[in-house]
Image (cartoon, rainbow, N blue to C red; front, side, top):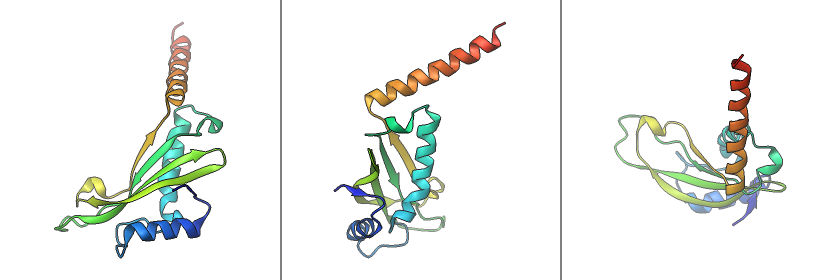
Length: 139
């Protein structure tokens, strides 16, 4: 599966086939994924990575879990894996997950996975920032 996030109809179809009849705690459209994607993009920017070097980065997003603490059973949720291509973000995988009722599940969970070269650039950018701050502070 490799679906451009701009193709809302195909995203909706793929998510519907994964979710089955579940709708409460699942992603059902590209617009459901957008807020978590914005958080992940913000993280990539904060790592000092230029947008042109995002190609190949992956983002794993789990949908929001039940908010009621009295919820007895696991809810069905959605896990989506997005990958940055040259022309934008693509959904490369989607699946069902069990969401346990807990405070930690009350917002979507987002993980950013970097390729080796991206990790190297992020570490170098951090070193540069630390060195710059050290030089300014040491007088």
